[in-house]
Structures are given as structure tokens and as C-alpha cells.
Image 1 (tube, rainbow, N blue to C red):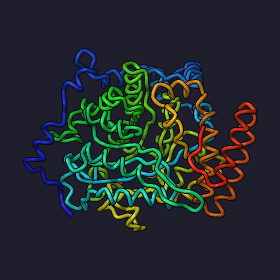
Image 2 (image 1 turned 180 degrees about the vertical axis):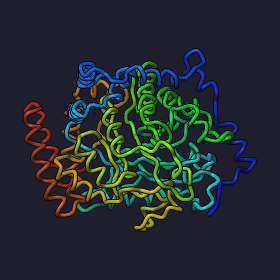
Image 3 (image 1 turned 180 degrees about the horizontal axis):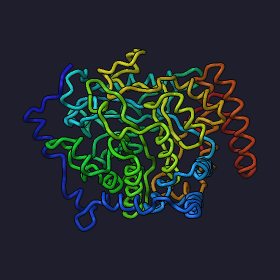
Image 4 (image 1 turned 120 degrees about the vertical axis):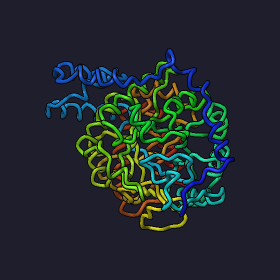
Length: 502
């Protein structure tokens, strides 16, 4: 157990990370797109909104249009319980229209916890002496992927790295290649990771171009908090992460580098949750304005306990469960085309409630966040190996069975990424509701594959009922020719073929 020491060589690496010209080029008149005073002014101006105004905003959301900051502020000020019920119902309709009746699952894979930053809320901060520090070798990364793809049945990962020269862009490139190379025999076919999304520190355009070449999926970076003063307080001076704008514009650099999809997020609990929701909407607008592409996904983790991290216990802006559900609802309405990710930070009972409300599109399962935790096979959480404490450690099989009992189909589809339905193309399909058709077809195929290769008898039984319902709905939605093609691919998967898609 040890803190991370900043040697002269590491200090030199730190000093070269930030490229100011790759920040300034996206700014407007030398200013970033988050104006703290303006956000608070809008929240204040739209207090006590008229019910008709609220319902007009909801109709716009149902048209799958990005809400303006003013319209978002209207929703954030709703107090009337009956209006909230209308908002929840509209959010559910929006999710159904854009993403149909499916939930995408994934797993996080932590590759290293060395970090040069010193974020007050993070268990991996460099001065934390109780953390067991480790970076996986490429062979260890492959072993983790073998468990995830061959024993659990995941098809997509979010791979997580600390900011340190030992886990730089070259290491990220090598781990992505290693994960894609894994192919493992399963009960009836083979297991393979088909989509590697990356959660890593902000990078330069050249580094992101390199990762694009090896098949990076969505590039996910959380701003943590959009409030400038709070950001400076929790990210100490002298660290890379202290530079607010270097982080704020990392998604812009990714899109300029050719990365198809980017993902936003806030660590709720650092500052007022209403301000943070507004910040996410402003971020989506600036990406749309400059690239014509909004965020592929938005995440909304809350502060959770972490080893030797007293800041979390002292935090002033912790978000209650009630407000947490409200902020998810507003995000679904404000950025209606975007996938919303609910993580295993949250306890099972709360995840169950939120999923049943039809607000989210993605969730993780069989989650372990210790370095090397999947192949080490330890069952209890070990906080000295983790960034934070998990709330839900249920298996993928258990989660899928619960989703099926709710009537949801679990989708392992990654077809859109291989067919070029990414970036501006998928945004158009999502906004018109057409992507839901492709997703429904491929969800049936990939769910069949997973049930045959990994499901317990109990999960398979309830899963079969979901597939039957999906077939009945699909027959009413597509042409006879497309339906016949679906049946053909379905039969081929039952006979042992894998990775077939529309």
C-alpha cells in the first residue's frame, strides 16, 4: 500500500500533458460555455413555472428535440406532484420511442489505479496511502477479458484508467487490442468482447486519433462538477485535473480526432444537483453547435464511500434518492436522444425502481472494480483495491432475470458500431425513432445468443417469454421480408453461429 510519488520524470510528463491550443480553439471569445451566474439566473427566473409552460416543454421532449437551458430550468423548478407524474410518464414514453423495450448491459474493467491527480473525493488520489497500487499487464488484461466474455457473457466493457504515464495512451491502445483479441469457448458458441468503451483522462487530438485506429468505442470523461469554484476546490492546484477547460473540451478534441461517440457525466454530490443538470445540457448544446453531434450517453454517479476519503462523509451537496430519480427524469427529457447509464454504485432496490420507471437505457452487472478482480475471483469488496464502494454486486444472470421479469429484453447488440451507425448517423436515427427498429431486431438475436451460452435454467425460462413477446411486436413493425430475415438469423444462432446482425 502506498501513495503515488511524483518523480522528476513523472513531473516532466505532467508538465507536457496540457496543450493550451487544443483548448482555446473551441472557446468563444476566450470563455468556456459554462457561465455560472447565467445558470443561476435561469434557475431563478423560471421559479414557479406555469403548468401549460411545463406541458409545452414535455411535448418538445416527445418530439425528441434537445431542450434549451431555459426549458430545462422550467422542469427543474416543478414542485407540483401531479406535474411530476406527467413528467415521469413522458420520460418513459421518450425512452420507449427512442430505445424501445431494451436495456443494454456492460461491465467496467479497471486496468490500473496509479494516478498523478489528488482529487479530494477519490480513493485513487495520489496521496491515499491505504490503496493497493497496481497496473495490469497485457496478459492480465486478457485474463480479465476471458472471464468477462467467456464465463459471465459480457459483450461490451467500459475500460477504466488512472491518469499516469504507466497507463498512458499507448497502454490504453495495447489494452484495447488485447481485449478485442480474446475469443473464448462457451456452452454453445464462443464469447468475445465486441465493444470497448474507454473511461480515461483527457487526451490530445493525436492520442485520440491513435485510439480511433484501434477501435475505441465511446470515449467517456466526466466533468465531475461544472461549477468553476467547486471544481477548483476539489481538484488541487498543481495537478493536471485542476485545469477546468482542458477537461471540459476533451470531448470536442475526441470528435475532431474522429472518435464517433462521446459520453458525459457528473459526480453528483459535489455541488447543487440542479446546477449540474444545467451544466450537462449546456455541454450537449455546445457539442451540437460545434459538431452537430450530442453525447452518446450521460452518466450520473453519486458520491459513494471510499477508503480513507473523509471528504465524502463531509460533503454538503449529497443527493437524496428522491432528487436522484428526479434528476434522471429531467435528463431523459432534456437530452431525449441520449442513452442514460445507471451504475452499480446504486443499491439493487433503487436500481430496480428506476429501471421499472423506464428512465434509463444502460446498466452494469457482475461488477467488480478492484484491479484484477474478475480473474482473482474474490467475492467480498476490498476497499483498499477499489475507487469507491459498490451498492449492487449481483451477477449478470440475476440482473437479466430481473429485467426479463419486468418485461425488458437485455440487448448485447454492438451491430451499429460495425455497420457505421455511429456519430451523426446514429443521432439522426435516434432523433427520428428509427434506430429502435434496428435495436429491437438485434436485441432478439443477441439475447438468444446469451440465453443459450450463459443463462441459468430459471433465467432462460423467463427470457424465452420475453423473446416471444418481442417477436410478436416485431412482426407488426417490420416488412415480411425483414421478418423472414430475422427468423433465418435466429435459427442460425440456435444452431451455434454467433455475432449475426442487421
